[in-house]
Image (cartoon, rainbow, N blue to C red; front, side, top):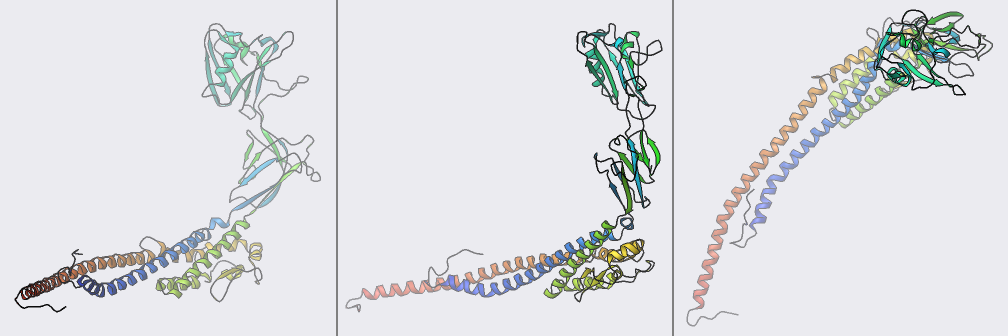
Length: 482
């Protein structure tokens, strides 16, 4: 708007007159535009809240309309009363319901090779090869090589093995016996478990026979794997894991048993206590494993759906009462109330959600009702397979509601279209405000031009009056009244 000071010449409050005139034209229109903008933004807020709450409902319905969520299995393991956890078990959704007893657990074992006394060294600094050579380590299908430089010591050999990047799980250690005639004995330990996977160490030169399980020219090297037959010796061969399932022995090359029980995986965690026979009278001896339908997850899914449904319904009712975006809210509310109680075919005795312990109050809110004739727990016990059909089958409650919400939530859906329309209205109001401000600027400019002429006219008249008065006062005999 123009910035001039009207009324300076005339002494009149022309600025006040201009402001009052502009305000009388400007303020009512601004108030009208602000009111329109506030109403549209209130509708946008209401639509945003509807979208938020039905999106939350839609996420719950996504679980409800997925039949796989009604076929999940829950695995429960009861461990022995003493000694710590014996096994862990997981089951896929295709596992058959059942109970099993797991006993006489023996962990899988890798092999261990120890230098005999004749192949021991007097110190870790003793040279194992004067000219250098290659050693090959093999267990089952896995293998790696190391190359020793000329003059490599026992300590160098240990380091070369342990630091080899492609080492599949062989560790080398040196045990020093001490005493009057100390010996430094090399020990190899392999992590490759399973019967038949004993560690084999070969070499490229007879100098390395003492630190190999096989001599270069054939025969036995200096590193021995005990079979546990010698008095006081332990069995250092690689072994399978072994368990009994309901009295039937099964083995695995690792501590994991895949499909020993069909569609379940058992991992053994420790050896059974000595004397374990699996006697049912002795809970120290065995673990029990139960596979059942995952009813708790289904119950939780249904309960969370009811909560999300009620939240969405409350929001829609509030929007309808406030008369903001009420057309969208009313249409969606009616659809939800009509469809949630739909009859579903093919679900046995479960024809509606009211047959699984869900009730509806006068306001349309749902409740998982433990006092109903047919409770959710009753349905879980007597018609579990039909619950999935009721919610996730063709024409099921979850499927139908999901299709309805998709119409509102999808890109280009009902909510997006209404938001776009309202945002266009906001943009239009902003444009109206800009246009109105420009018109007021021109209006004020015209007022100032009009009053500027008046200001000059009055200022001129006042100046002429002052000149006349001055001239009169100079005439002979003129006296000014006090």
